[in-house]
Image (cartoon, rainbow, N blue to C red; front, top):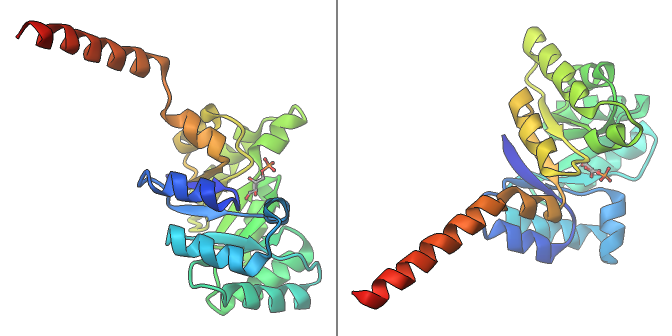
Length: 216
Ligand code: E4P
């Protein structure tokens, strides 16, 4: 499973990219707005740093406008994946852009049938929003499981991008259930590597070594 950052903050992206385990980035209009910077140069710079798929979302809502905006976004850099909302117009735009060879990430997926429709429209990936489903006391992970099973049974190649991740268990569970990609905030990325037993174990190794080497 590939690990992506869900942010438009360049300093976070540079920091995690330096670990050597970052495969891509997802952004959305809220995340871009948070940077206070214009969309195009921000996406261009993220692509330069990451050199992997970078999702950039349209803000139009009608299919013809989404198609035009999607083409513009795809023109920013070959790494751009155009992100479209899962609406009827979004499906139409997905079909059109995918037919032109533009990769599409269908976002705001909250049901298996939406994921099936997105695949039929040629989406490169679908983004089920785990955390937002959990937030309303439903089971986000069950949705990942259902989509993964349908895609497997039906021989569908569209990738499952587990999104709206809130904590490290979401990442491990999504991987176990067959999601191809997980996108998460930098905070969760940091949490993935941390384990109290790793820290305590390393501390003990270094302490023992320091003691022993003093007597050598
Ligand atoms: C996905 O690509 C979205 O940008 C993101 O994961 C949404 O997460 P949120 O529910 O934490 O806003």
